[in-house]
Length: 326
Ligand code: SF4
Image: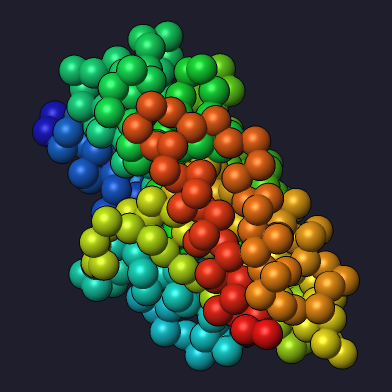
């Protein structure tokens, strides 16, 4: 560790003032404190936002769901509205981290968590995300867990959040509050692919706070669920995952929302899979045909070619689980 100052914001105004002056927000701290211990992150000032009134889960006027940024992962996973309306979110959260971490970590922090790339967390390794221009040790190193989609010549790290995959599938938006007021960013625009600036990971401006994640209203009935494939069944990040939500009426799929995790530099929406499903009748043949598009555009690395096939199978299995066998 190294010296830093710590302040607790009593209200939103205090938090924003501290953030505008360069303070770094902290809530559950389950990622940031780890990174500070490893000196990967070295903020000079931490601003504890744990007392801000951002702990509510509510149904919006339009029938969507708004989850406050400071709702813990455990609270969100167990919330009756989340379970009833979007089981895919509950399942993604319950398959994340450990029970202790889920009690501490918040929804806002979860989507902001940084990559688990081991080279990023090893300050002796070259890493463009940690130090732009230094290189990427993963490209020629051990890259079994890295991305096959959305990568660049400068970074191939995956985004580690499971919940973010569910949010991406459901086309959620992120509500922000900053010195210039409130704004909302679609989930697709919030997390950034690495390109040639892998050090830039999100659309937050200086001093902005995440206040909530909002999932839009989707037609009912809606079946949804999350499948996570990993090396061990607990406390492990995804090799591949699939978040699926299907609206079927009159025996026809009217809407399909599908995204994948463990494979992309950001949670990876699968529009080609969604398109292949929409307007069709559920069947085992359809699940297999649609899933064939899951790895479209993949650029596997030396050690993670297996992810192409694994992703296809993960998506197919989760489509069958949610949509049924016919
Ligand atoms: Fe750093 Fe990204 Fe390369 Fe990992 S993959 S070493 S995070 S630049």
